[in-house]
Amino acid sequence: MPEDVLQGWLQALLNGVVSGSLLALPALGFSAIFAVLRFPNFAVGALATAGAYAAWVVNARLGLPVGAGVAAAFLVAALVGVLLEAAALERLGRGGALMKAIGSLAMAMVLENALRFAFGNDLQAFDLPLARDMLLGPVRIGPQQINNFLVAIAVMAALWAFLALTPLGRSMRAVADNPDLARLKGVNPRRIALITVAAGAGLCGVGGTLIGLDTAIDPLLGGRVLLSVFAAAVLGGLGSIPGAVAGAFVIGIAEEFTVLALSPSYRMAVGFVVILAVLTVRPAGLLGSRAA
Amino acid sequence: MLTYLLFALVVGSVYALLAQSLMLSWGLAGLVNLGLAGFFAVGAYASAMLVAWGHAPVLLGPLAAMAAAGVAGLVVCFSTLRLRDDYLAIVTLGFAEVVRLVASNEVWLTGGTDGISGIPGFLRRESGMAFHLGTLALALLAVAAVYLLQRRLLRSPWGRALRSVREDETVAAVAGKNVVRFKAQAFALAAAIAGLAGALYGHYTSYVAPDQFQPLITIYIFLAVTAGGNARPAGAVVGAYLLVGFLEATRFAAEWLPELSALQRASLREMLVGLGLVVVLSLRPDGLLPERSQKAPSR
Image 1 (cartoon, rainbow over the protein chains, first blue to last red):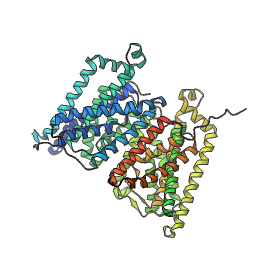
Image 2: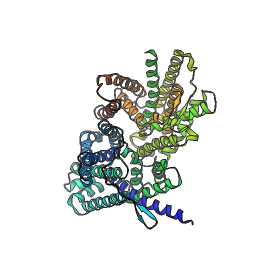
Image 3: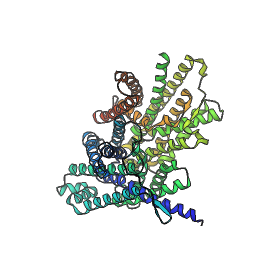
Image 4: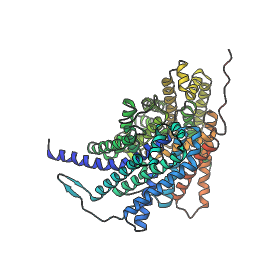
């Protein structure tokens, strides 16, 4: 095999792992909300965009460090997510999960246009120091990519610790497994639902910020990765937390290799093809347990 | 002014067809189609390619559009019909995005972002007012035909079986109904109606491009159908014309806000549509014309 082909593959693999780690955060948010509230929340893309703009305002307009921006992204996205759920989606739940799904799509449109109203359609960039790519053997990687990857891994580790070690995390898993049993044990399902939405939306916000740090931000930032996020969650098994992470890495890597073979504009189509294939062959996904 | 009114009415009729498509799949069969804009696009492109590039007679266009969109509908719903309903929602949402992606990038097939222009109308465009009036008559004819078809289907055993599938799949299956086949038929037929709407639209505006098929259209139609009543063909039609009235009214209302940029006015309007959908869904989920409960046929 010629050496430059191998080098191209290694580079695609590395880029795929990094972009997979960024996708993993909104995919986790989407899957966690699905696990506890039992509906696909189509507003995750818009929530990611909202978080990215919050981080951008803190960083580029207020001049604070990017770290503060990431924290602001989590808080603002969590707040907006809870507001959407409590003010609009909760009351649609009586009509069934699909009503909430449609409502979330409508609210995503409202949120995206509110951002467009406030910030316009132009691309906005974070205030970052210029840095040169580093060479790691045959492949190159930007310092910002390394930072984003580490932040994503740290957030995932924090989420894991929260779910595994805290009483709140245990209640969340209990509601996801069996809401009736959890209620019998004295868990308040509404409180758990809102906390899940806050955490899930916050993850989307951080994910959106990292994607924005990697490229730039505009009102369609979240919408562009929406299909990849769904694909990651479906591939891992809707509602499965470890599945969403595994799915995100697979999708990230698959997308980079597609870019290598086809035009870069088909990056989004990878997600769709994966969703169709998984649902046809193994609807429960890699690590999921329920589909029907 | 008259031309403007006719234009709004033709667009209203196109939306009325889309609304009936959504009523059939969502209202009647319980299958949420979040990719309505995608099927609309498939129909518009199929007809435009055949007539503008293939020089086929213009009346073949709508037939090709319905066939193409119907087949696309079968392919899209095939993998999810045995699963929970939310999977179909995800897949259809993705489908509409992929259609736009292919339309923007495969220049050899679709003309890319420039789209296809110079699509012949059903009547000669040079005839001015007669062109608009004639197209409106054809569009109303299509709306009426689909409306009568839907009424007929609703009363038929097929329509009853479909509603039983919507209410409880297990019961329908126990009663010996082939649930997957009923759902696939309803979804494909609904997709074909959306394709017909696309063909009408393309031949009327003489131009199709990926930008015309934004996901926004899907939300518009959801608003039209929920406002009008999602399980009554008449509700869907009324809702569609009301929607166009509302959209055109906001165009004039925007002039009261001269300090805003055009972009801001457009985003304000889309926010109103989204909020409107959520408000209608939570306050009047059955719409203006709720579903009539049918009596059991007497023996």
